[in-house]
Each structure stands twice: as structure tokens, then as C-alpha cells.
Image (cartoon, rainbow, N blue to C red; front, side, top):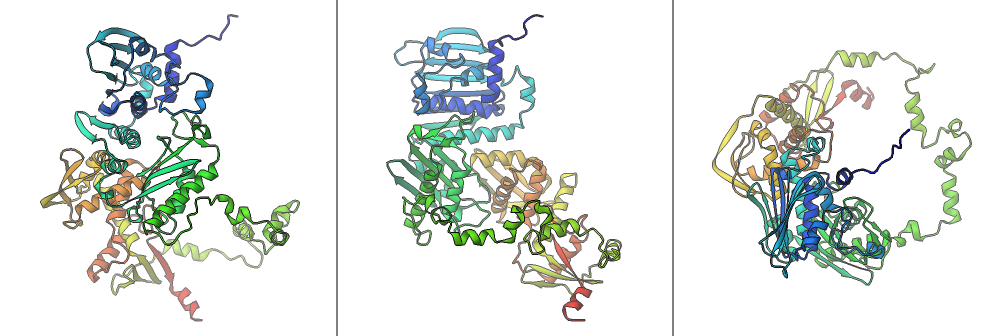
Length: 606
């Protein structure tokens, strides 16, 4: 039998590595931008065509590369940033693994131009499928330009897995923002299909945040600044009124590297406790500087997840720093912001578990239920787990209590009939509707959500909603990520009565809206719809269209607390009970509760 184990050819090994490093166009954008930052550039320009599928090009004015370095940069494990194993534990550069360019060259056609200041000419290299096709001298300015064309041209299966251009462009915008936010002292520009998306002049951290996230934050940022021997934290948090239903405007950077950390996000949320609604998320852009030896950035291929040597100290520090900042600016009530306070001071950690507490805990029936041998035979009637036994045994007929389920059958076969006369609105939120066997208590917002959802569903299936033309068309300016999202939704929104036209950079003209959107409220309606859409965007089980329908239904529904005329109440109830599914919203909330006359009689002893 011949030997069967063999070494993979370099181009295949590189393609396998690329699967980890270059997952989509945005991954390549991240690697190329980080390399430009590491090269000491003060100006970085990103250009993409066809959402990065046709072209991704990054041009910088950094220190450039020699002819040999330019050639070596595309070899696997080639790097200028690590000399020995110790360097791996004190990384201060953005890129360092030496796989990015090799991976890019394995899945795209790459053209590199680079020149150092001391060289008379630069070098031009063309690579395809990990093979150098052309290398020649070239006249150019100091710096580097890398263009990657036709991403995944040689891996068609990977190309087929890419999402729509709008979706991929949103990922590219996200990666661009994360790098540009970290380095306000560097000029960045971003052009997509020849149209400028971002033009970010050098400036302060606050100016960069406002440039990226929009002028609405200009007067609503609270500076955070704390320094200790162990670590520093600086940046900005949004005032409580800027909190949104989505996490979009939340950025954590450790040693200038963007990271995702549910743990640190929890620290921020705790600092805002009782200042914002439970289902809202504060805006923050926070930078943590600490000794690289205190963290491990190699726990994830994209380097977006890191591990701290002492997470508890970092958590307590972040929470305290934000509380301190909010208290200084008189936004929060008086707060305890002692920076030395650690999680160790919590009662559960610091106070001893006394014998009294121990006996109290061990005497509870719940404790006994789980500590007796063969505990399933010893579930006491008074145990906190009793309702679980009831749950499993309720369907088993008991000799004394079993009754035939006649009442349930009657419910199914005889639907109650709502009477649409003498309707009553309670607390500007509920509507009482008499039926032939009692009454319904209808929640007006939930009911309207159901009506709108079914109306919108019919509209996108081919019965477009009428549009009222705007006499004085308004313009709406969005920040880049939202503008890309809105462009993606435009075709479906046209069916739903919105007439929007792109008008320059991240701006749209509102030519028309559905008849029930009041004039002058168009911009707010669209902004709220986008925010609601992003709220659904993390839920993969919904299609793009389904998210849009639910977002619009939720956003346009008449809110609880709104007084309705008799005619409006009657139309709402008629429309609700003409729905295919009148009893719940698309999100599963009940639209009404039923109260039967017999139950009411029993309450009064009749």
C-alpha cells in the first residue's frame, strides 16, 4: 500500500487559512486598514466596488516596503511585528499574525504598489491564486496601495455564501468605523462605487465620534477619564436620553483594538442602572489602556474577543469610572464611585456564610428536595417544586375530580361575537367590547399592531398601500450604516406607501408617505422604523421582509395613552376582528383578554 499522508500545496494551505481570516469582504477591509495604521500612515483611503466583491483597495501614506519586503509580505507567517515568543505576549500593533496578506492572495487577484521614502522607485507586484504573475518597478509617492479584485474568484462556493451587496456593505461600514474610531489623529475616507461614504478629517476623539455617529450626539456626550497604575480608561458615554432599543452605537477598545465583551458591556449597563429603561442600550465609545501582558488577544481568529488576566478588577473599574463621570455631570443621583471598590465588596462575596444562614438554607424544602436520596419519591406537597408535579399530572384523570371537557369543546365551536356598539375606552389604552357571553378587554396598541401587520403583509404580496405625496418633500440625513440599511429596504418600503429617493451622500428625499403618517412626522417615523428594524436584526429566524413588516407595525401603531374618538374605536375593533389572526400580535402578545359573564357572576357570589 502506498503512503497516503502528504503535505498540502501552499495555495491550498493558504485557502484553508483564508477561511479563518477572510470570511467576507469586511474581513479583508479590516486586515488592510490595520496594516495601514501599523505602517504609520496619517492618511488612509478605502475604496470598494460591488460591496467589496469586485474591488477592495486601501491606499496609505505610510512608510512603505522595500522590494524584498513587498514580496515576502505574501508568504505565510511572514511578519515584521514579532521577532520572538516574548513579543507575542506584549503585542502593541494591530496586525501581527502574518497570515492576512497570504490569505487575501489565496482567494483574490491582488495588486500591490509600495515605496519607501528613501527609494527612488516603488515596486508593483501582481499575484493570483498565491502565485506572483508580475513584478516590476513603478513611479509613485511614498506609501502603499493594495487592491484586491474578484474576492473568492477561485472558491465559488464561498462566493455563493456572501449576502446581498447592501448586507455586505453594512459589514464593511462596521469594520471601517471600528478602525477609524480608534485613530482620530488619522485622516480616513471611504468610497463605495465611486460615491463618498465617509470623509473623516483629523481631530479630537469627540469630533471623530460626532463625525461617525451624527451631529445628534454633539451636545449629549459625557467624557469618561480615569487613570491608575494598573489601567486607564477614557472616552465618552451618551447621556441617558440618547439610549436606544439597539446596541448599535457601542464601542469598546482595548489598547486601541476593537473588542466585543458581554462582560464589560454588563459593567456599563450596571453603571446606567435605573437611569435608562430596562430594554434600552446606552451609547458608549470607551478605550481601555493596560499592559499587554495583562491580556490575551489570541483567543479568537478575528482578535475581537480577548481575555483579561483579572476580569473582576477591569469590570469594577469600568463601572466605577462611568458612575463617576455621570455623577460629575449631575446626570445621576449621588453615587458611590470609589475606584478601589471591587466586586469583592459585594455582600455575597465579602460577608461570611454564618451557621445561622447555613441552617436556614439547608432547612428549606427546596434544599431538601434535591439533597434526599432518590429525591423524586420525596417531593413534598409544600415544596417550591410542587407546581412542576401539577404540570405533569394535571392531565391524568383523578377518581374524585375528573370531569369531561365539555366546556372547552363549547369554546372551540362557539366563538364569541363582539358587539361594536357602546364601546368604551379605559385609561386611553384599553377598549371594552361586549360579547354574547361576557366582554373582551382589548389592548389598543397591540390590536392596531395586528391590523397593520396583516395590511402590510398584503401590501408586499401585491396590494401596494396608497401613498400621499408630500407638498414640500423633506430630506432625511442618516449616518452611513443606516443609509446603507435604508437603501436595502427601499423596494419593500415602496410597496408600503413610502416614496424615498437617494439624494447625495447618506441623504434621502421623502417624496411620499402612507396616508396615516402625519405630515411633518415623516423623518421621525423613518428613523424610528430603522431603529426598530435593527432591534429585530439579531434574530436570524426572521427574513428581511418580516423584520420590516414587524418594525413598521410596531412603530406606526397607535400608542397606549392615546385618546380615540368613537369612530376611531369602532374602526379599530371592526378591523381587528376581520383579521386572519385577531387574538395576538405578530410578536405573540395578546390583543385582547376575554372575561365571561359566569366568571363575573361568581365574583359577586351569584
